[in-house]
Image (cartoon, rainbow over all chains, first blue to last red; front, side):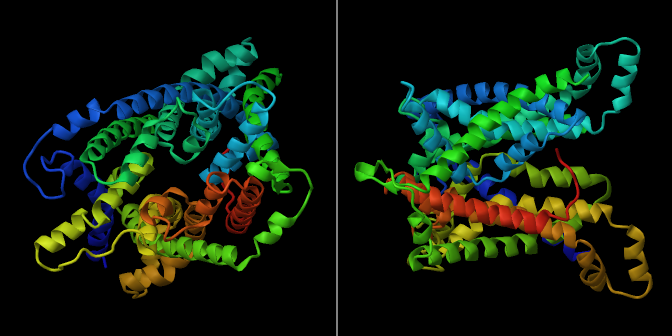
Length: 252
Length: 276
């Protein structure tokens, strides 16, 4: 038992990592087939020369940055407010946004946009994607920041206010500096979530807002192109660094 | 006192009202409408869309979704419980092993699904290796079936099982395990008859957290099932895109939401921990 458990665990870890490792290895394969023919960076060149992929990556970065800023501000403020006193509606709505299947949130937002757009002269585009992404990222930020707040002693703020600080000063000078690692961690997770989303994005995107996951999805459906392996490797490594950073921040 | 709190809560409350509550209300309204010509919406208020859900065609799709999600949940448990047990006994390396479980979860779900397409398709790595080794002549049909979908879901949601189980194992009194050993139980007996029952809350939480996203999955059955293993999520997507029957799609969508809420209520009711 005590000898078997580590072996079993190692097998599960292998299961978690081997597919991604294999994908990364074959992104350096010279051949377009799954037979190793030698090391090459050709597929990385192909990926970066692919206009759709590059344009999708830019769109994803813009959307991810905008959604992250929006969700981080709104989510952090909400976490702080909920730490003071809970609000049933906001908490319920945040939980709901976490457990709603992506496809349900996607079609709901699509229906909502179409209904609104009947009265306003707007179409689906980058803005509709950004609004959707902020919606599902707020809860992630709020959760991470709230977890951080729970380690914060409320008497610190009370002491500051007893010494004459206003509510705002207590927040800005006492709570906020303590929350910064949590806020940054929340922002990193929000960006990772936004950058990766396919299901909701594909439903509310317009013609000018094709994101990287949408391009990858289309390429994956069409068939084999090792360029997808190359871009996938870049994404996994990039997001991996983000997540490691977020995890480190959450522990400080 | 409290003005700042109101000010800070307002953006989130307003945002959730506009982009969570309002869209849900719209979908509720749509689900009571009829489909007009050209895919538009007809006026009469009707329950017809909900009645259509009882059609054997959709009931079997629902049953199939439950089967896929259930199988994925069981496999996640079989992999996740020993993994959580291993991590909880890893001493100072605990955090490292734990983050190794979480890490892949945050790195691109799409890429991780694509990785399995790369491995499993006819010209994929598994078939190529088996053919080169002379073990098979024709490629095995590994992709586009139920097994591939279940595999993809297990791969995607395993952390949701391992984490809550780990959390309950962490809270477990080590003396209980020692007492079991002192009284002569073998390690396996201790795990099966002492640790496993005590880890029940974590197992239930993990099962709910895995089952829910699996039941509502769209991308995994779409890419790994290739239309041959469609689930509720695919039906919803299809009603809103190809079929352009938004009222029925809305009804299916709300039905899925109702199932999710019921499962959450049943499974997590007793889990007291407040995350927000």
